[in-house]
Amino acid sequence: MNGFFVWYNNYKRKLHPLELACIAHTKLTRIHPFSDGNGRTARIVSNFILHKQGYPMFLVDVKERKIYYNSLDESDRGNERDFIKFIFDIIVKQLKSQI
Image 1 (cartoon, rainbow, N blue to C red):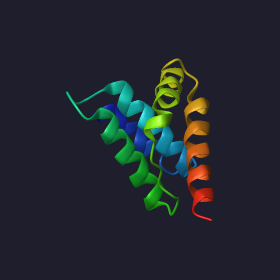
Image 2: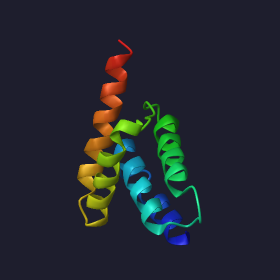
Image 3: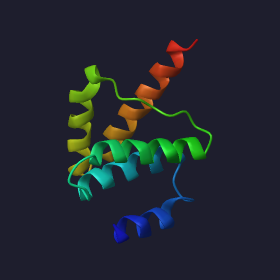
Image 4: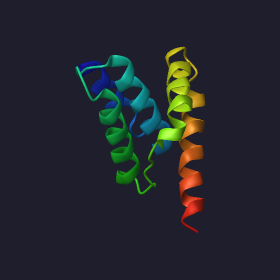
């Protein structure tokens, strides 16, 4: 976890909030620091980062869980852009549903 916080402090002003939130999410799920609740914790941290910067938060619908897990797997292989796009698309979809 120390490495995560060092990374976060180094990048919190260098990355766009969406990118920061998504990469933080993937890093936390990759580290898997807890025996239970790692995904929930990662989503809470991501949403906190977004909310703190004035961006909308997101909710991963149960119907989208398979895509969510697949995009997390892609990020473990070095393709973090896939997960960032997945979360971006969710946020856009949720905002459109509010119109």
